[in-house]
Image (tube, rainbow, N blue to C red):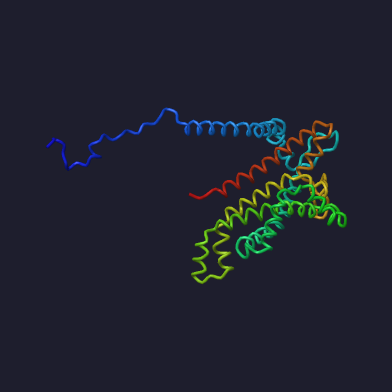
Length: 301
């Protein structure tokens, strides 16, 4: 009989092989290369963005952040050889038309999303509406202006109402799709639990679906508002422009995008500098809305 312990299984007597990793595996190499390419693409994509922001700060920041800040924000646009002036009517007009568009598009978009996501998501009407909303995402913005011009402006003239309705057409697609996506992400077990407790469908929508999907809905709304604030083509056909503050919504209305378009082609340095300043203000407004959308839409820990 040998000295080998018969009670020990043969596998235990064998030495355990050590798992060694090669210095440079193929998968690690691929991951490193793809990560580096991703960072390179991100840096290259950010170069134009930061270049534009830097140019706006250099060209328009002196007026916006200088001693004449109040005049720039509240003053009227200057005449040809006039010095000074401001972009006050354009700021007020932009906010007014975006407000009109929000009042029109947000309730309609959320109600449409509730129908598409909760009430009857698989019906023929829902599929058709969803398809049309997606088609609108590729709809040229100038066509919205032409449509409102043919329907409203020809009969009642240029106005803030017409500009707001044109912007509402463009905002509606974003609000509907974003709100429907947010509503569809609400867990089904939460709705089933509410039904099991005896809630009606209306109570489930108001007490469960909308509060749970609210961050995603607000994200879509803010992105739609940011996109509408920077539109110019629809306003050329609907609101036109004005050098004065609006006294009523049924008259031609100034906007930042049209002011930039008008002043950038003038041969006067003061107007060109105001165009840069208006561009900076518009970019800051859009940036604020996008940051708010990111903060509201990020998941809560």
